[in-house]
Length: 108
Length: 113
Image (cartoon, rainbow over all chains, first blue to last red; front, side):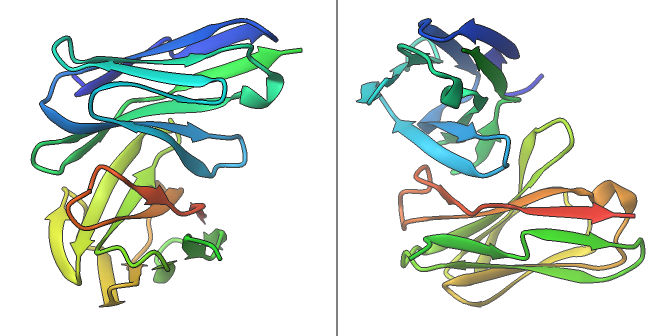
């Protein structure tokens, strides 16, 4: 069983829809990342969280440490948001674990 | 002014060859990493170097050897390439005591034929 589980694996949405991607993990963490990987392959770090909530533009990331769960929300989705979103956690021993990613397609 | 750079971006080579992928970061970070992303898009850490010392070595074949000439560079050398080595390899770096804050390179797509 993977230490980091994401859902859904694939997601198709209409432009403008509100999108939620979920991440659950089983290890004690020092930080959680949300990463974005576009079809071209490059990886961009969207958020790093250790508690609470962060917002950047139309993206919001939340984390509940007690429940070992994080969500990434995209408001007013746009076709350019189409990408793979990866949840990754850094445990208290500085070991990194990655989720398998959520492939998002936003249709105009 | 690229923060983490990798060369080459694409590498196509035959089985049995030896190849290297270079990584450089200009962020002054102490720790650098190599990750492998397989065909199923799953990222897995391979190595971590902290100020030129290896601190993580996952169950990676010893055909893979990281080489760090200085704090800003972490190169990945692969001997006797196999078909299963085909993947995208990402380099990353993080500041001292903030290993959770990682900056990724653009990736190197390796294809072994």
